[in-house]
Length: 227
Image (cartoon, rainbow, N blue to C red; front, side, top):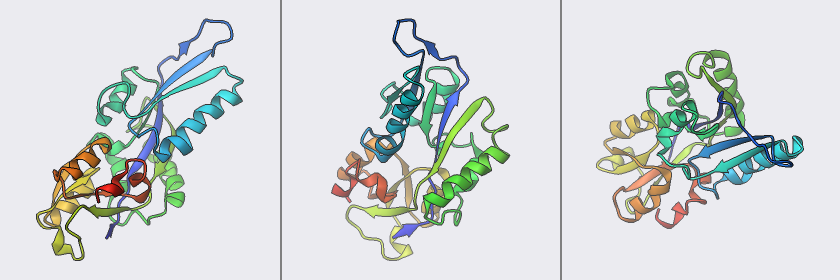
């Protein structure tokens, strides 16, 4: 069963000064990019890692981007924006919904029926909307490098199948984002917030009955083994 949903992802760079390498032959500028995603997720294998390599190549080695996936530099995904603003890291790959109430305009893109299910068309539209309407308010002091929308999420359950709306009643489902949580509540379920890295174990231990995630995320986190 599918539900209309948008997970809105962004990459941002802070205005903090980069580290300047002094050693001869070393990169002149080094940036640290912190991400919540697994190193095997498509975010990294198809986007962040190749992009970092291309930046190094196109700058003839003057610019180096050290990529730290899976919150390797510490903290929780909800801390990424604060880490950027505090200068702990230079770049982040995050979901604005991880910090509820901070990016209210952006959350509007997660409302029901905003997601047609095709990230290829929605991602540039979201980028245009943010640059036109939100860059000087919600994102003041943050430089938006890229905006990405996923395909629609599906409801994955471990034991009880969902065939009718009534089947949501009493189920505990992992969600990401305020609006999808409200939808689950309205259907009689209980939304549970769990970092992506903990969804597998929580489902295997029956701490949740399932989760709402798109197909692309299920493979790197092996979620198909538990639902």
